[in-house]
Amino acid sequence: MVKIPAVQPPRRPELGSALLITLLIITSLLAGAAVIGGMQLRGARSADLTRNGLASLYCAESGLVAARTLVATNYALWNASFCNPPAPAGTGACVVGTPASEPAWLQDPALEHDLDGDTVDDFIITLKDNDDEQDPLANDLTVDNDLQVFIISTCTKFPEVQKQVSELVRCSGGTCSRKLWLRTK
Image (tube, rainbow, N blue to C red; front, side, top):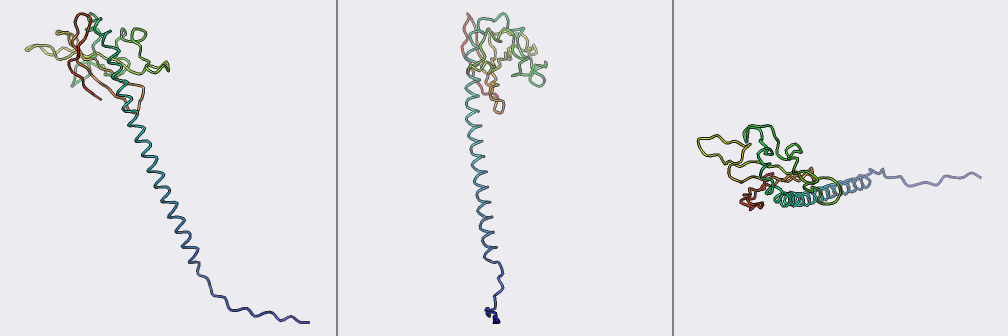
């Protein structure tokens, strides 16, 4: 017996438009997810920098508080300890906030620099003379004439957001009184 093949209706050629639309929708969803994910990561990084910036400011302020008494009781060491920055702020080569700018008598163990107990110094203290020379004398940043000094504390705990604060204090009789507080960096 001979089989007669069944006649099939003619097929319409498919153009693949359904597949193309599905691929476009999937691609759009993936692109949207990538954009939202990137925005979320940028927001988290920004919040982290803000939090670390505030913690760095508190760290620098803690350095000022810790150093104030030691600075007041060591007036005789001030002139040899001043940081004389390069021009235009001064005539020396001392860079404020670097380990080389910190006087030896303000370093560990005389002044504890570790605020959080991780055995790493968290701040650097620098002393800078104020403009205390009278005319016609030129300003000499290596000699104090009026018992006033800038104590500058630089927080090094958060390298990406280092904060620096300065405080002009007048010291006499082993105590210092704050004259001016500045956030300098």
